[in-house]
Structure formats: C-alpha cells, structure tokens
Image 1: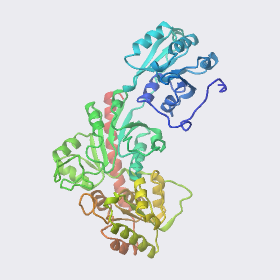
Image 2: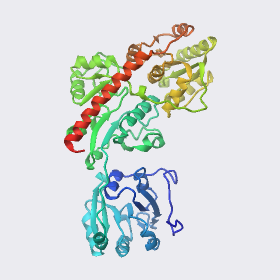
Image 3: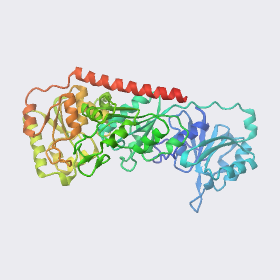
Image 4: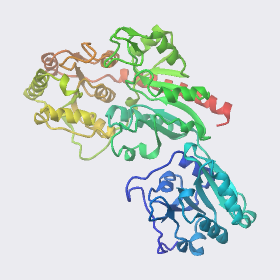
Length: 539
C-alpha cells in the first residue's frame, strides 16, 4: 500500500507510549478477523487494536481520530477513507466506544457506499440501536463477539459484499492456561519461575498471567515473557466470562501464602476447570509456621487452621510441593501431593559475552529487611563477611535478587564494601553470573541457592544476623531447601568463613538429576489431567 495516503501511518508498540488493551480485546477481535488479514484501526491514541493483535499474524495500520473541542467525543476524518485506501484492507476497526464518535452515522454511510467491513465497539444496552442505525444506512450485522465487562464488538458490512464473498474461515483458537504468582515485581526467583512455567505451556497453550497490577514494577509488561502473554489483574474474573477455552488455572511456585489468588482458584473450580498449585512451600502446623507468618491460615497468634488448609489444598486437581517439608505438611493434613522440585532448576542461563568467568568471585545475596528491623550489628556482621572473604582471596560482589535488595544494600551503606551486579529483572543473566562464579552466599534469600545448586556451583546459606519478624531463628523455606539439597547453613559469620577457607563442592549431579526427574514427572501428571479435561470438553 502507498503509505503516503493522508493521515495513514504504521505504528509499533514502542512508539508513542505504552499500548492499552481493553479487557478481552484479543479474543474478541480474533473471533471476527482472520489470520493474515489487514486491519485499519481508527484510533484514539491508545493503539488498542495494534496491541491486542500483536503476534497474531494480523497487520494493523492506524488512522487517528480527531478529538472534538469539548473533549468527550472524537470524529472520523471521512476524507481519509477513500476507496483507494479502504479497498486495500480487510477490516476497518474502531475500539473507541461507538457513542463517543460524533459523526458515527456518516461513517456507517461511508462504509456502506464503499462496501467495507466495519468492526466497532459498543455496550449491550446500545447494541440494538447501533444495529438498527446501521441497517437503515445499508449495513447488516455479520458477526458479534463479547468482550466481558468491556461490552461487545459488532462486525457490520454491506449485504452486497456478504453475497459475493465466501464466508471467512473460523480462526483457530488455542486453549488457555491462567497462571498466577508473585509476578511482575522484579523478584528474580519468581521471574525465573514464571519464565520456566511459561515455556512449559507456551508450545500448546496461550498464557494469561495474573499479576497484582498495583504492586508491579513499572515497565514489566515489556519483559520476557510478559510481552508474549495476556496480562490481567489478579482480581479480574472477567476472563472466565469471555467464552474462551480455558483449560487450566495454576498457582505458580514459590513461597506463596495459602490462599494466594484464591478468587481465581475458586472461580475456576466452580466452572469445573482443573486447578493446580505447583512448586510451592507450605507453612508448618506449629506456630510460628513460617517467616513471615501465613496470615491466611492463622487464627490469633498461636493457632494454625489445619482444617482450612486441608479443605483448600484438597480442592486442587493436583498439588506439587518443592520440598520434603511441604510433603510432610500435606501428609499431616491428609492431602495427596507430589514431592517435586523448584521450577527454577529448568531455567536456561544467558550466554552474554561480557560476563567473565572468575572462580574466586563470591556472590553475596542480601535479603532486604525494613530498616527499623535492622540493627547496626547487622551492618557490622556483613562488613565482617566481606572483609573475611577478601582476606581469603575471594572477590566478593553483591547480587541483589530484587529492586528492594539493591535499595536496602545502598541504604545501609553496604554497597561501598564491594561491587554490585544488578540484573534482578533478567534471571537468565543472573544465572549466568552465578555459573561464572566460584561461590554463592545467600543471606535470607532462597533462589540464589537454587540457581547455584542447579549449576553445581558451591553455595551456602547464612542465617540473617538479626531478629526475624516471626521470632524464629531461621527462615523455614530456606531450612527446607538446604535440607533437601544437602546445603550448609551457618548461624554466624565466623562459622561460614571457617568453611570458605577450605575446598568447596557443589550439589552432585545425582541429586540434581533426582530433582529434575521429580519435577518432570509432576509436570507430566498435570498435563495428563489437562488433556483429559480438554478431550471431555472438546477444547
């Protein structure tokens, strides 16, 4: 097409700010538009169709709408909609609500004259009025797609065009998996979990990822693999009402509270959709059960509601815990569960050329703590750790696993003791750094230990030298991981330095292979359940 036509331009997602997608846009548009079609969007600056159709094989051109002086209405430049332009596209699309287009009737008349297809957005209450207006001007409704709380999309076209054209082939629709976790927050461990979970499902499923939009890091939508998923707020249940083939709902791994994203779990269960909780920890049944305490199952200060935990966990189609501690809790509750492993052992590392190997580099990962909980003695202990490592010939460096870790290290003045490698948003690069180093020390962080263990890099844990919020002497989930993987955990800095003076060994290949086998068997069992559900429901 000659792109010099008046007002016509091609825009990408990086141009003009972050695209906005109204709820259900991709599914609704895909139901009305065939793969390989060319779309001309009459846009209000939100690039809604462009963003919604990204990666679908549908080309999107844009023609901007003009804002009315009053500010609440827009106007279509009808002069730009010449036959030479319209004849080169398959659909004209406007996702601006129809009642906000000031010259809507004139647009319908132009579409009828040009025998063009128009897809427009309206509400259920205004749908009849729009259809009647279109019919009076020579257009008929040839397609309709619901978009949840965002209304409906109507496809309008001339009866003459309908008579001469063969009916379009229905687009293929892939089944969907909904995944929820502590995602979009820039926590390197949780981002690693999501990457591996996404890569497990992506070959055969479209992925909806549910995040806490209010706590997410700015710009996370552009990270891999969020830029290949549909992102929904974790309180948004509309996804279940959009007529889409949801094949499973899964709570993805990590130290998530019992009842995390339970609204999505119960909604899926109510519709008979398989639900899974995979790769998680569980709080102990004696208080304090974990650090921090799991408020979802705690009544008062000393009582764990075991019956509530059993009822909730027992409702999942399959439960997979990542530690023997979690398996023991399930057995005490009478809940059937798989003993699997942490999803992050599947994470692929980067191959960046600017990461140098150094067998004497010691990476220190400091968990962030609220400043009012950090005594000055903690700063002195970390200083002693860094200086002790240097005295032994190590080259210590800080490796924050989330933005809060980096900020906390700087606020405590510890960043002046050693260099900092900050790549928390890219778990693959972090794993490459660990692979290229000789030692990893986790201070209150779990996933540095998992990353190192999966690579065979020597790793140890240091119990944070401060009073933990739970009152426990150590962090439950780290205790469990160290026990499963045979990792040393030290209560004091002198004890740790005594160990780093001698030769250090990583986790054995046998232990890693056993963990990988448990994880793969659990995944296979989950996929079998999903396959049976799909076969029974023709998804």
